[in-house]
Length: 526
Image 1: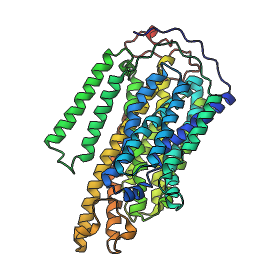
Image 2: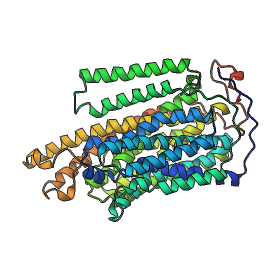
Image 3: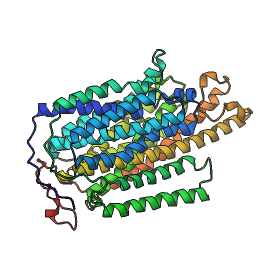
C-alpha cells in the first residue's frame, strides 16, 4: 500500500476563474481530438500519394485510436500521483512533436508510426482535460462545464473532416498541413494553461507506474485489432491464425487482470468496478465509441466515393451531425446542472444514436441528402447526450483521490471500443465494397480488373462507365457498415438502463455512496 498524506480541502473557484482555466484545456482538447478526425476526408488523397489501400485507410485511423486507448489509463493514473498541470502540458508537447513528424511522412509505415505517437499525446490531453475539470468543479456544477467539453469534442470530431477537406482542396497547402494545423494552437494552449490553470495540491504520494500492466493491455488490444483487420482477407475467420490471435489476446487480457490485482499502483484499479455505475458506464462507453468513431471515419468515404464530392464538400455535408452533437451536449449540460439529474439524458442519447445509425444503414449512393441530414442529426444528438455524461456519472460515484483513474477508465473503454469497432467495420467495408463491385462489374459485363486495383479509387481517373459501379459499391458498403454499428448502440442503451441514478454531489469533499460490500470508510477521499 502506498503512503498518502491528507490533501488540503479544495477551494471553490469562481466561474470566471474556471472559464479562464478551461480556455486552455478546451483549446488543447480541440486540437487533440482534431488529430484523430482531420485526416478522415483527406485520407483518400493521402493514400493515393503514399500508395496505400483500404487496410491502410483503417490503420491510419485506428493506430491513433489504439495508442489513445493504451495511454489513457496511464495518464489517468499518473494524474492521481503527480501534477495534473504538468502532465497535460507534457501531453501537448508530445502531440506537437509527433504532429510535426507525421507531416513529414514519406511512407504509410512512417505515417502510421507517427499516428501512434500522436495518439499518446492526444490521449493525455483528452483524459486530463476531464480530470482537471473534476479537480476544479464539484459534480453538481460540472454539468454546465462538461457541456462545453461536449461541444468542443463535437466540433473537433465532426468538424475535423471539414477542416481536413479544405486543407486538401487548397493547392498551396496540401495534405501534410492536416498534421501541422494543430501545432500553433497546441503551443498557445500550453502557454494559457501555464498562466491560468491553478489546481489544488494533491496528497503527497510516491509514484509507482504500472509499466507491465500498460504493456499487457496494449498488447492484448493490438493483437485483437490485428486479427479483426486481417481476418477474412489474409486468412479465413475460422482458421488457425484466428485461434492463435484470439486466444493470445484473451490470454494477455487475463494476465493484465492478474497483474492489476497485485500491482501497488494498478493502471486500472479493479476495485473501481465494484461500483455498478463505473462498470456499466465503462461498458456502455465502449459500445457508444463504436458509433462515435465509426460514423466520423466512414462518412468521409461515403460522401467522396459514393456521392463523388470533394473533401471540402464532404466535410460540409456532415454539418447536421456537428450541430446535433454540439447543441445537445451544451443544452444537456446546463439542464443537468440545474436539476441534478442525468440518467434520462443517457437513455435518450443511446436510443437516438441507435435510431440514427439504423437509419444511416439504409444509405445508398442515390439516397437523398435531406434524409441523410436527418439521420446524421439524430446520431449527433445521441452522441452529444451520452459521451460526456457517462464520464460525469462515473466522476459522481468515486472519491476525489480516484477521479483520474475512474475518468480515464471511461475514456479508455470508449476509445478501445472505437478503435476495435473502426478496425472491424473497416475490414467489413473493404470486403463488402469488393463484393458489391464484383457483382456490379459482372452485371455490366466488365472484367473485374477494370476496377483499378485494391487501393482507394481515384474516381476522376477511372473510365466513365466504371465510376457508377464503384460509387454504388461504396454507397451500399458504407450503408451496411452503419447498419452493423446500430446494434452496438442498442447494447449501450440496455447497459445504461441498469445504471442507478445518484443525485449529483454539490462538493468534491462530499463522500460518494459506497458500492455493495464496501465499507464507507474505504471511500473517503484522501
